[in-house]
Image (cartoon, rainbow, N blue to C red; front, side, top):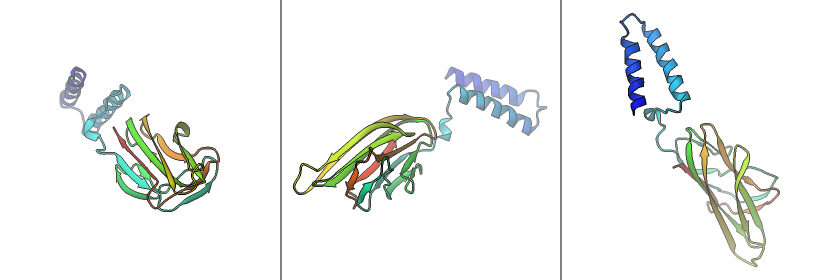
Length: 180
């Protein structure tokens, strides 16, 4: 709080500095100090983007996905902050912070679908949905990952190796996340 007061006092002094600055000079000085503060880690809470949360699901069954193929959850039920892209299947952090992600996969008996959540292409966690031991019915598997992200970082779900055999769509398999 003391730092914010000193910054405000400094800015007030610059703005009032004798009254000879043009509006453009004041704006230039303001942007200079804003850059310094941002570099020190200060974030203007008034510029916060508000709620960041999404909920998506698969509408169709997926079969025989390739090595590390992105799972695209094409139905978006909620997209506060517009950070989830339903065309690419990627979530892009609009601001830095800690995010929570959940994903669930449902598969049929005698098949499997193994996925992983990745941050900028680096594996964070697995989800192993395996129905090969069943003679009938379905099996589901879910996982959660808590990930610290920087602005612009991307998270998505992809197949692990060549294990994208069969996932049930019809909104049974889903992917969601939110800023903590």
